[in-house]
Image 1 (cartoon, one colour):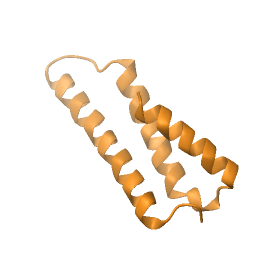
Image 2 (cartoon, helix red, strand yellow; image 1 turned 45 degrees about the horizontal axis):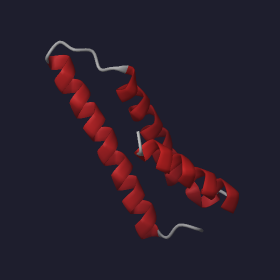
Image 3 (tube, helix red, strand yellow; image 1 turned 60 degrees about the horizontal axis):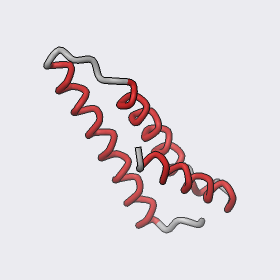
Image 4 (tube, one colour; image 1 turned 45 degrees about the vertical axis):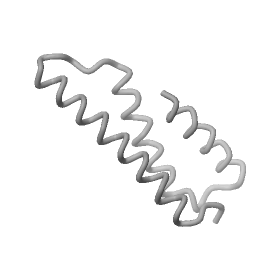
Length: 78
């Protein structure tokens, strides 16, 4: 296992907070009569994908971990 439980939990918490943030903002926009733009949908989708990936990170190889970390960094920068 390349990730210890503390790092894995912190990463998952960050991703879950981002999902909740995007959902809350989308709901607020919808209540005001606006349609959330495609960027919010993209952020939401990628964060959900990364949550699943990090929950199952124990089965990944070292190379897959590196690629997952790179993807995580790109998604966080959105």
